[in-house]
Image (cartoon, rainbow, N blue to C red; front, side, top):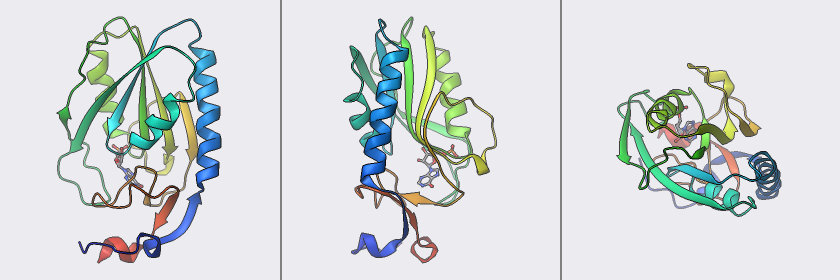
Length: 186
Ligand code: IMP
């Protein structure tokens, strides 16, 4: 893959603007704060794609909370397809036994990564586990998993920005955009 110099030139369409994302994150934070009122929450985010969402969402939640980070990678697959085989690169740094856990994800595509993570985290005996994903791409779902908080449902297109990458590039775009097919076919 060539190193892109002009990130914007590779974007065919802006799907979600910075303002739309900020509005939705504030709304999700309010809902989560109301739903978990009186409880102590642990937000678990999955690196690296969820990093901007996690950073913004946690500051919109008005409850005492802890954060923890995991990093996973999928074996095989192509640049734009997930293979479903998940490898844990970084595990939680503190126990979650007896705690209310909210898994913070960037995007649910096939659902395979989330399915694996939920089963893995349930094995650590949290009091509850729910999922908050900024984006949901239901067209490509292979495993049905309830997503408790969804920011935006998006069409079946490969998107980048606000944490999401192609080949580790484009994560720093402030909006979510659809990548031109030429950008990943070259
Ligand atoms: P799933 O296991 O197919 O649900 O894929 C989950 C992971 O694949 C996400 O956390 C992303 O890292 C990546 N992914 C899925 N769709 C996209 C996309 O449109 N753009 C960038 N990354 C994506």
